[in-house]
Every structure is written in C-alpha cells, then in structure tokens.
Length: 183
Length: 189
Image (tube, rainbow over all chains, first blue to last red; front, top):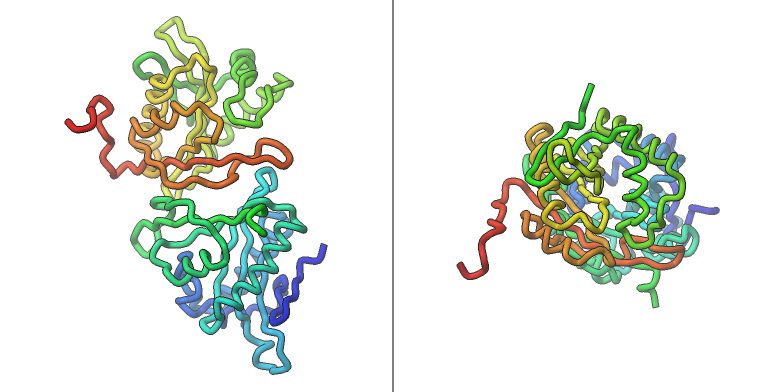
C-alpha cells in the first residue's frame, strides 16, 4: 500500500524521521498552527525530532499516520517548507474510525486545504476502508471550524473538559465525515 | 494488593471480580447489551477477563466490578460495572454497565453513583463519560440524566454492528463541579 499521495498542487508524504526535523520545526513553531487543537508551539528544534520518532513508532504499530505536505514547485524554497502536517490518529480498526487533524501554514487557503484533505480522505475511505473520520477542536477556533464545515464535516456536539491546557479546562467540538457522506 | 474495593449501596453492592464468578458472568454475557454483540461462546474467556480486571486496576487503565443485588448473605450477580478509557492526567474516565434485563435502572443508577463517588474521592477524577449506543434500552438515557449526566454529542455511525452496518452513539458526560439535579424534584417546582 502506498501511503504517499500526490495532488495537482501538493505532495503529501510520510515523514522521513532523519531529514524532516528542521522543516517540521519551521511549521510547528508558529503558535497559530496548532492553536485550534490546542497544542503548544514548539520552542526548540529537538522537539520536532521527538515528534518524528513518535510518529514513526505509532505508524509502525498501525495506530496513527502522519503526513507532511509540500507544495509542488520548481522553487527550492517551496520544497524546503511544509504547508501542513496532517495526522490520522486513534485509528480503531474494529469500529472503522479514526481521528483526523490538520495543522496549516499561515498562507494555506481553504481550497488548498480541500485539495489536501480530499486526497487523505480518499485514501482513508478507499484504501484503509475506514468508515468514519472525526475532527476535534476548541469551540473558539472559528476559522478551522468554518474550514471543517466547508469540507463537509458535520457538527456532532461539544465534549466538556477534555484536557487541561494552559491552566484551564478545554472543551472540544466534534465533527465527523463518513464514507457514505461522499456523493 | 486490592485496587478494586467492595462498595455497598441501597439494594446491592459492587465488588471485585473473582474466579468463582465465571458461571454468573457467563449468564450475563449470554444476553449482551450492545447492538451487534453476540452471546459469549467460551466461558474460559471470562477467566482472562477476571485476570485482566486486576491488571487494569493496578495500572490505572480501568476497573471492573461485579454488580450484585440483594443484601448481606443473599447477593445475586446481575451485571458488571466497567470503567475504561481512564485518562489519569485529564481526570476523566468512561463507564459502562453490562447487565441482565432484570437489572433495573434504579439499581444501575445507584451502582454508577457509587463507583463515581469512589473514583472521584480516591483518584480525583472529575469527568465521567457514558456511551449510549442506538439500540440499547432507551430508558438508560433518562437514568443518566437523572444522576447528572448531560448529552454532549451524538456520533454518527460511531458503533459497528456488523461488517458494513453502523449505529449512532450518544456521548453523555457528568462533570463533578456541576450541580447534580435533585432526582426527586419535578419540573416547574
């Protein structure tokens, strides 16, 4: 099974643990990138190496997959900067469900996100035979909630006090998209 | 070392699973509560479950109690209270009850209250979840709200019943810093 995906404008690939650390740090040091989840920004590049190691272990255990997204370009700078990290986690093979999350560079537009997520969804539903993809994010993440709804994710409710973050309890809104939602 | 305590409530008790519960548990799992589950075929599977209940409690991954009704000297095992998806750092856990049809809502509610009381006082858990799967007894939903749970979300196709069939799951939560409504009060009073 080929887990590396390509779209018209993007290469969506699994990480290379020994090569992607600096570029991943470049993406995840921006506090806005993971604020909707929520996740703290990275402060030192060694954190990205640790994330890549963990991602490799979770992938080998078939518990999760991480994709890094590069813009297809002839420009060397574009090839050195990740546009997004997309993570599929909490894969439950018995229930055919998983949790999806995205962390986007500031300049990624909604139609570009749609292109990336469409490719990931097709892989999840058609290749992995998953039935349900779920998104969780903080209620105040207006832009990412709008993105989710524009991509066809349906609001299911709000789960209270899911984690403690920055000295307060965080609720998370829940969205889903089913294989059968696709037209 | 005993991590799962025996706890009494009005009309029954919960207590740790023991090897001699195998036959009674087998009777419980002949009538599975969740849609799509089949009756248990092999009683030996319960030996493993009983072992696992001890390991889960010792490592703070979950807890299982035998749910018995009756009084001192005359208890009958009618179900199991399970606590799983334990997130100690997030202070949350998910509860479930597998019981025979004769285990009524009042006893289920009393058992849940008792286990919540223990888990909150011993482990400081404050966020309790319960999943109601479409097809389960609808009366359980009223029972949950009566003891302070609120419906948080309805997961579309969150439970698989067969190879290609799914049903929805309702997620209920109870946060302990919220007031629990008085179950004897009537609306408008």
